[in-house]
Length: 175
Length: 417
Image (tube, rainbow over all chains, first blue to last red; front, top):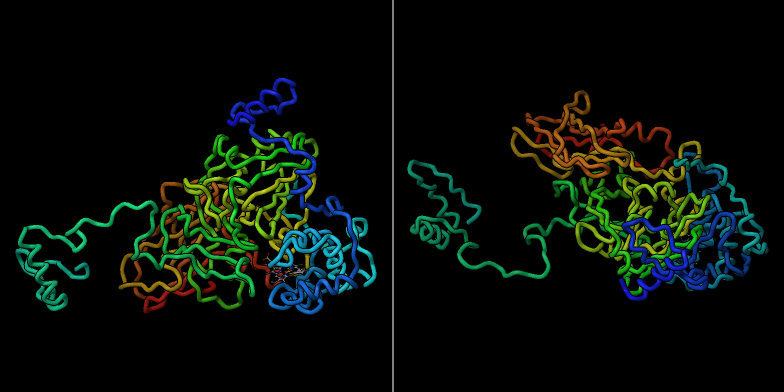
């Protein structure tokens, strides 16, 4: 145990706020400041919890999409070498289901969450929050879910009801 | 000299003269020299062998035993799979170098000194753990399988794909995973009332993220640091990964970076768009976590050629995400009749279990298959039972019975039976 950890444990114990540690736990976790936490927290919940400040619409989103995404996902998200992102509406119960962001995804917040984490594929993290809101708006627009000039931000995104939202069941039941 | 048949052909050890014709004069001379001393030495026994080395590698004669069907999505190198060559393996532990991979944006080159695991969300004290700190916690060993829920997805094809056992079913492997029970770390952070899920993020370029029920996490999840006794390989999450015994591989987030404790799932891309199961009515099931009871005959399997008619060993692997394998039955007549296979000594919960049957092949066409039952009573379903009610193209969570046809000339192929 490092001196710092040892001291930390002693201090915590002394003021009685230490975790109720199991006997076999060395208790080496370091406490974090709010700033340190914010830096690693990328999770966005379906109710919008975690969405950052910023906004965008499909008009600006189109330019950002064409520059950063079109090469792999095709014009208007209709598919290129990688996943099709638009269309497929009403196809899921048919002979050839086409699962896209618009036809399949249950939550609009997932679009922002995923793009901020992982896209564009070869340069994740390169888009600003405004850009990501705009591309999210663009993907919703090309899927006929919102109007082209609708502003998408932390308030409005969780309120977008995805067309396929009610067609999911859970294979796991929490106790 | 290895290929020479040295079986005596006449009394008193006289060998076939053709040995000299095949091996030429030099070979013949060597044979004679060896015999003159009253002992036989192969070429590699006549001088000291290679020295010690600081890293073990397989025999050069086994260089064909590699991961199979390594592929990535078009235009990318980092999101795809490589498969365990099941047809070349025996036993229950998968060598780490052959453990299948499924990455969503490549393998990050993580400096362990800079990597932290952060636990936050609905906890009393958000905490950060270095690798050095985690390695000081009591390590729990779990000898268990890991299976991608896309494994065997090729079996939904309308016509049987003529691919090897590993190509078809090689997104499964078993290892000894060693790590810190996540419950210990969560207890240290102090989980708040009302918490029901954790959201686990990886430190890869895709920041792969999955929601996992807290109940499972508190039950048996570990933050794995070791695989088969050594630190994790980069392709398996170095320096740390989540390991959830028996649950789908994608949820066992590699390069584990953050765990956020929440009251509901985050509905990430990989638990909604992907790894969900669509049925023919357009209803999709999320969160199918435990992998179903399953078995495959690995030997013989597609691509093998039988020798002459006679007795053969039929061997394979069986596993279940719900517990131990209780029974494996093998059929050689396409499922009309079944006989219990012998299980190898180590029958572990949520681990690959090796089974073996003795089979006297009469030299005619045959269809061989295996069917596993776990200790919860789940029986491996037929292919058509698995596909019943599924949407076209729904390939996740496939655990149907695998059939291999043996032709009259001894060729083994993939068939639907």
